[in-house]
Every structure is written in C-alpha cells, then in structure tokens.
Image 1 (spheres, rainbow, N blue to C red):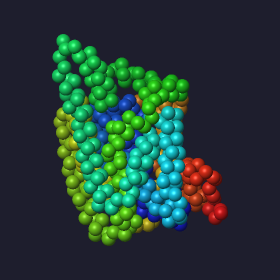
Image 2 (cartoon, rainbow, N blue to C red):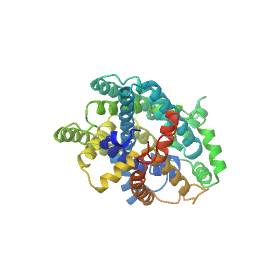
Image 3 (cartoon, one colour):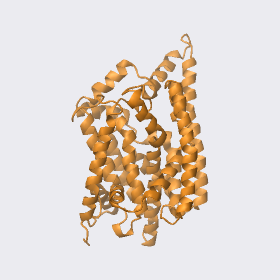
Image 4 (cartoon, rainbow, N blue to C red):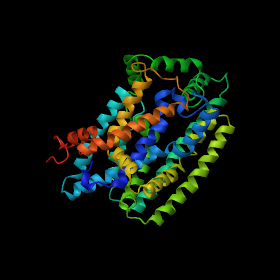
Length: 412
C-alpha cells in the first residue's frame, strides 16, 4: 500500500467502485443457497422484480466487478514492485512477503468467516503475475487474451460434461457415478433437490461450530481448487491491469478522447453479448446446460470488454467532488472494506447472528447492499482523515515489512 502522497487517486476511485460492486453479486452467496448465485430459479425468486434484478446484475455487474478488482490488483502489484525498485529494495522479497501474508489473510477469511474468499486466489496468482512484470504492455495484453481463451475452453468442459452425464443410460455400469456427478452440478448451478436446499438452510441458520466444520470439510485445500478453475482468467485480468498501469491508462495519462474510444469498444462489444446470453438463459428457463454454457464459457471472452468499459466510465466520471472523494477513500481501504463486508453480512445472515439466511427475496437482498454501501462511504473518508491506512491495510503492511508502520497522519 503506498503512502498517501504517492497514491494514484484514479486507481483508488476504480478500486472503490470495484470493492462496492462485488457485493452486488456476493450478497446472493451470503444470503441464499449456493446455486442461487448462478441460477435465479434455484432460490429467491425468478419473476418480476427478482428477475429484473438478476437481469441487471448479469448484464452489468456479474463477473465484471470481480474482473475489475483483479485488474486493479495487477496494477497495484506492479506499482508496489516499481516503488520497491526505486527505493533499491529487493522487489521479489517485498512482493513475496506481501503475497505470503495475503495468503494467510485469505485462508483465515475462507476457513473462519466466509467460503467465497478471493484473497487466497490473488495471493497464489499474484506470485505468478510477478514474473511477467518486465513484459511490454502490448505483450501482456496478447498473453492475457490467450489466457482468456484458454479459460473459455476450461469452462466449456462443464456444460458439455453435464450434457454427457445426462445421456448416460440407467442400465449403464457408470450410471450411478454419472447420476452423482449430475446431482452435484445441479446443487451448484441448477435446481437443487429439496433435501439439499433444506440442508443448506439448516446449516447456515445454525451455530458457528457446524458452519465452521462444514467450511473445513469443503475447503480443506484452500484456494487451490479455485485457482485451477479460475486461474487463467484471473491471471489474465492481472496482466491487463499491469499493462493498463504501464501504458499510462490508470495513471490518468491518456486523453479523454482515447479513453472514450475504449469505453465505446468495451460496452459496444460487451453489453449486446451479455444481453443475448441473458435472453438465451431466460428462454431456456435456466436449464442446467444453458446456465453452465451461458455463465461460464460464453461470457469468458466478452467479460474483459465490459470491465474495461467500466474502468473507462469511472475514470471519465471521476472529476472530483465529495462523492468521488468518498469512493476513492473506500478504494484506499479496499482490503479492510472487503473483509468487513464479509463480517457484516455473515453476522446478518448466519444463525450465530441475526439468521436472515434464505428469508429475503433476491430483490430484497439489495436493501442490505445499500446499507453496507452507506457504511463504507460514511466511515472510510473520516478514518483516512486521521490515519494513513485502513486498519487491515496497516496490519498487512506492518506484517509484510516486519515492523509496525506509522499509522497516524504526520507520524514518522
């Protein structure tokens, strides 16, 4: 984390939007059974306002905020490395220490608080991204595009695997295993059985001990399974972010006309493609095959266009003012705000807190999002008026550097 005078406010503003925007999708993971994240028919309502909420989120935000966050992570990674080199520090040592402690935070978040952690994934892939730091920005973009296409191929195995499982005859020797795999896919992406839905409702409306035991049982390998499934595109997004910083895009060095051209390209390609996929999913009544095809391989090649479009739009609109200052402050404290969001939401939805899990419709969940956003915007700027870092940013920085860092503004 850079000290305040050395920061790029453009990065902070985009990161602030990203960390708040991620909650638009994560809120479903906090408040509903697993399959509802991908399939509105699974739980929480798929008609009227609930369907409208799904459509808006799918076209505008789903995957784009995560992509934007990964994009900014890559940019910040390169910025930290460049500043370490400028200070004649060992850049690999600085970076490796940061990633090692980020992995510790990620594992703690994953195992102790919420199963949807992305910090551990970033720590693993951040170490890989470091070794591409010397590439020209154009080569980073080309390599990133190749990784995105590779990700689409990885994702394609899911729908076509499901299609194959559905064709296995009941009298076939492999039917029992195929039926088991198909049920697992339905529990995650399709329409879970009533028994599975009841199991998840009982689990997350229960006490901390049983939730913790389930989390360890299903996430014993930490971020490794997620890295295998989402690794290529996440690394690609980091490379795009490094290229965007090196090219001057995220430093505010591009002309507004050039940024507008990239915005039109991003939204011009991304919005129609996502809208067409949404129509396909609705017309297919969110069948298992259509969901696996629509939300995985079909979206992968067009998602980068949309989150780059979002980055352009944010940079064009971020022209000062009190709201921009508060969003930038939220971005400077993205690490703290990300983890605090998990703490708030698990307390609201899980049984050891208020126990709201499964009680709110899809549309009603966004009342919670609005409340959490208000808290983030209200508290980040006043905190940073007194302190140089967010509380968890300070802990991460101090651990990474092996000594307590100055916290209060004006401290030596």
